[in-house]
Each structure stands twice: as structure tokens, then as C-alpha cells.
Length: 302
Image 1 (spheres, rainbow, N blue to C red):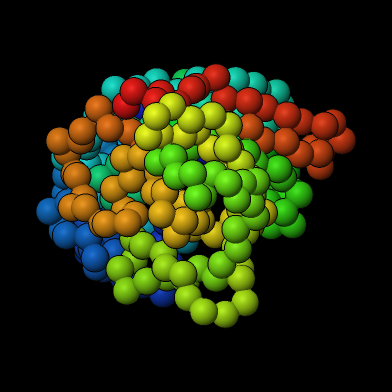
Image 2 (cartoon, helix red, strand yellow):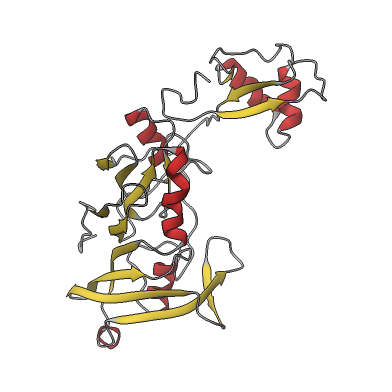
């Protein structure tokens, strides 16, 4: 297959045209195959050359339906938030790529974000269409994200996270409370489940399924910098645990209060003060001990 990634770093999706279907043209097939996407959207994709054959030749909406073939198509967005911060590649070999992600940038395409994602920026920068993240961090969180380069090795790296064989260390700025600081270092444990709102997690009764080692690094007046070492990988675990202790992370838009979602006019002056600072593991492919550290720093003044 000749073309799997466009000039913006976006990978194509592939669709098979079954022999047991008949359609008057390709537009008819795509609108039938993807009923959640409006016909007008497919017309625009055809008009913009975003639907093509396996050799990368653009197709027309009126082209004939040819069963037992594969076609490529790309997603499109009329408008997308622009993220004015640059990622850095800290390390790259034939197996993995380690990126230092800025705040506000999603790791993978979702919702309003397609080109303005770490994955597609890196694909465009490196030309590696096979890049795939082996773990995720929130869009609001800055710091280290590791990508697999070779698809045949991807599962071996992902299994490190499944088996909790990766040490991750975060830093956060949150309120300084002496009654909390006097308890540190502390391993905080609780049971986290989805709340009524899909964006938020909540603590519930029951056996703990999340644990975080919380340590104090330093404090300046009303604020402190904490080191957080998660023993588990639950969604929003670090944000939930600090919030439960009465010290929610500075500029958190989800805990303790969920604020209205910002779509396009983002306030870049108030990044969530959470940073994926360090990551270490035994490389399952090369056998090497790997340790990486973000070059970013959290700022007490934000």
C-alpha cells in the first residue's frame, strides 16, 4: 500500500469493499458503511482528495463500486484548535521514540483534534507512519510519552504497562497544607470508579484499586511541589488523590469542580500543573535499562 500518511502526518484508515454488496457508486457505499457521517462530509472528502485507492490515487464520489478491493480514506476537520507549543523528541532508535509533550496537546486524534496531536505531529516530523503510543497521558498533562516504532514489537512494550513493570514519576504543584505535609511521604490508596459524568472519576467504598506515593519536594508560601509515583494506572488517579487530600492540582479544570469545556478559545495562561517527569523500565526488546527525564519544569508563578 503506497500511501498511508499524508503531508500533515495523519494516517489513513482502510476499508474493504465486500463482494456481497452492490452500490451505484463509491459515495453510496461510504454513506451506507458509515451512517454516522453525513453524506455532505463524504462529498467534501472526495472533493479534497481524501479518498483513494491502495496506490494513493484520489477517487471520485461517482466512481464505480469495485468489490473485493481496499480503499484508503482520511478524516478531515473544518476547524481545529491551534496549540502554540512544540513537543521535543528526547530519544529515538529503531524500536522506540520518547517525546516530551507540552501542556494542552492531545496524544492521539480525538474530538476536535486531528493535526494538533502529538502522534500526528511526530508522524509528520519523522515520516514514521507506524508510530503508536504505548501509553497515554491526559491532554492537560505535560511530559514524557513513549511510542513504539515497529508494529511487531508494540505489544511487548505495551505489556510493560499492563504488568506494572514501568516506574513513572510525576511532579505537581498544589496547595501547601501543613496537616497534609506532616503525613508525607504517604501512600494514598482508594477505589476509583467512573462517576455520573464521563469526564470525572470518583472515590467509592470497596477494596482499593489505585495507589499513589506522595512526597513533598518543596514549598513556597501557599503552594508546594509534590512528587507523585503511581503504583497503578487508573484514569485521573493523581488528580483524584490530591483532590481527596484537599490539595487539588493547580489549574485543574476537572477536580474538584468540573468547569465548562473550552473548545477553541483556550486559555493557555493556566496550564494544569502536572508533569510526567520520569519513566524507567527494562527494555523487553533490547534488554537495556531505560530511563528518561522530561526537560520541562513546573512554575510556581503560574
